[in-house]
Every structure is written in C-alpha cells, then in structure tokens.
Length: 101
Image (cartoon, rainbow, N blue to C red):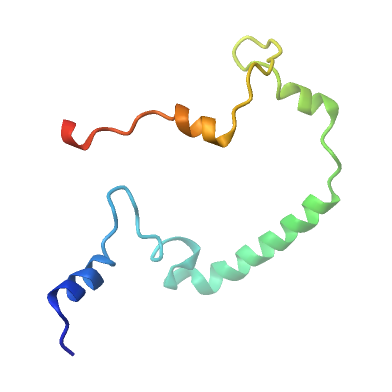
C-alpha cells in the first residue's frame, strides 16, 4: 500500500500527543495486565456506591453551614458577586506567549 507523503504524515502525527498529555491506555485499571481483575472490582465498587448514595439522607444544616465559614479566620463568608461562565473565561489568566521563550 502506497501513501502520499501528506497522508503518511497525517496518519503518523495522530500517534503523537501534545506536550503535557500522557497516554493512559496502558496504565490504571484498563491496562491489559490488570483489566481482568480490576474491571469487575470497579463495577462492584460503583454498584455499592450507588446503593449508599441513594440511601443517604440530606446533609444536615450544620454541615452546609460549615461550608460558608472561612478556612483562615473562621468567619462567615458572603457572596459578593456571581460570575457566569462567559465572565469566568474573560477573567482567566493570560496564556503564556510562545515567542517569549
């Protein structure tokens, strides 16, 4: 089978990952060595998790109140401003300039 140079490079580059990404298919519970033992265990744990989450009651008022306490001083936190997803994108930190390096 003969391929054009452009097509060969396109197919070859599908196998390269961008910087910072890790190929995960060979790791974890889906790895060939561990899949037979760990996949049934994951299913079992997920089914037991579903049973426990459906049977638990609503969190108490005190537990939800603790979420609004400042972790530093212990004072009650107040909502100052609510941001939409679009506003959060506008406030995200700038991406590093590729030419700066």
